[in-house]
Amino acid sequence: MKLENVVPWGRNLEEYQKMFRLSKEDLQLKILGCGDGPSSFNFEVTKLNGNITSIDPIYQFTKDEIQIRIDETSSVVSEQLKQNQNDFVWKSIKNVDELIDIRLKAMNNFIMDYENGKKETRYIHQELPKLSFGNDSFDLVLSSHFLFLYSEHFDLQFHIDSILEMCRVSKKEVRIFPLLDLKNQKSEYLAQILEILENKGFETKIIKTDYEFQKGANELLSIKVHNKYEETNNLP
Image (cartoon, rainbow, N blue to C red; front, side):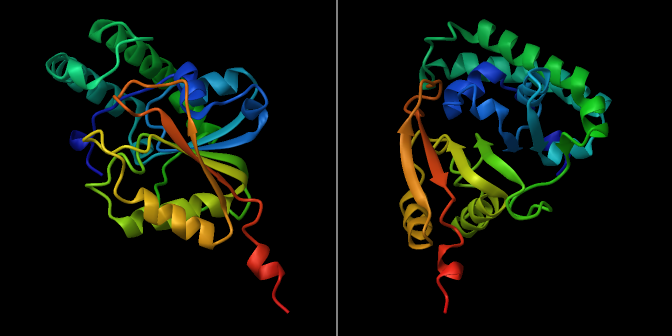
């Protein structure tokens, strides 16, 4: 990854709660966030005494490098959003200026927490489809605005490998949001992936969320992983 190709974009805990339908009980679980980037999710969950680890390739860079890139891109992103306002639902967030303010506050909290979080191994430079964690290392594994969204950039095999890897390190559940691609269409990979997961004994469910900012992006994929060893356990 080259930092000049990255557009930092940070979401906050409230958005994560709505995207992933996270309950208070969920926030007490051991959580892995895949592709959290410069969000304040880790910072805010840690403040609530939660147990959270975030992975992202952007964590290979220093605090100052990430801050400079945020400063470089925020005005460009703001202008692009103003030009494409009709692609989004302006309900809980009223306008572009409010959105930019929310994003900058989230990223500022991330920057403030980043160095300490790296020391505590809450921010780890890793990326899908290969994780270093052991089987069942986390209760709940989340992927926000990466898988399915970038279907044009990452092929079906990448999605399969990534999702199975997330299932491997989770002992309870994997949740992925959103299920649309960048063209606001349901990802072309979704049906095939559901079939593969179900054939492997996973319990899948598409769940409506309380969050819709990208038009039509208001569903998450829940994968219950409690049956993942069923085939092995039933061998003679």
